[in-house]
Image: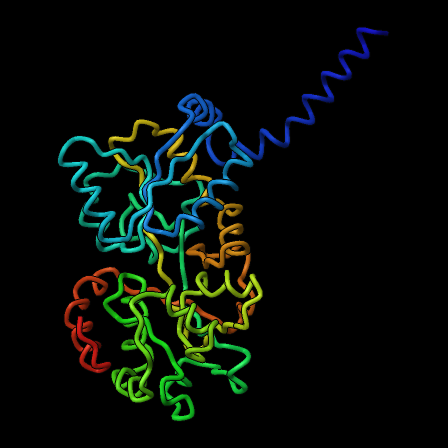
Length: 341
């Protein structure tokens, strides 16, 4: 009887562990997971905010607690310079790199290993700059407003040209701010019309160097309305700030990041597992519901607040135009808004 009881207990324990094992194996084979846990750590270079990536790592470690992730954060241009410098010296320390500017990453594609996630077929082909890079992060532009100041909030991108919002009520992140803002600038020109910049600039918006100070000014009431990356204003809305955001019907410009595994990775299995998890439905759902991200998946596992999949559509810039049009169009944007770098 005692032996039978022990056998039943062992079987119960085995079955109890089965769901956990199945949960893990969808992020990689048993061999990859074991090798990753043996490596035990990885170094992660990112141009994203440190606080955001700490939340991602914390969630990753709920499934894979044996793998430590060291985050190295730097602004976009500085991060690329660091990668190039370290690579030239034969000392590239990154296992995984996460960057918002796909064009800059394309220039250093030779530093990255071939990689394909288990659910590669779930992703939009137009969100990929290179088969080596995958959009673990996808951000999207929304129109935010201060709920205490705006009684008739904008409902579209076209509304941002209305005279009723004149006299510095609107804030704008400058076009040359980076890859994310350049994506918005492209969208404005290609979707909203060649005269959109002139009409929008006529409202005399206040110009900001990046999204963080723009969102701070919105919350403080220094401006009333601003196009912002949704994840930036989302965190403030969650914290109770007097703000809301809408996804405009003309389209949501999205920015698929370029994430890749370096050829010199000292923890290639841990790097692959981290990438696999982040690109999984579970990883993307966490990014959408907890971080305010969008996704580059064909069928999103979740939707941000206020997103109606029947009416809201995403807009992705064409890869060749992302680079070929940049300098000329940004120069024209600067002139339209009277901005000097």
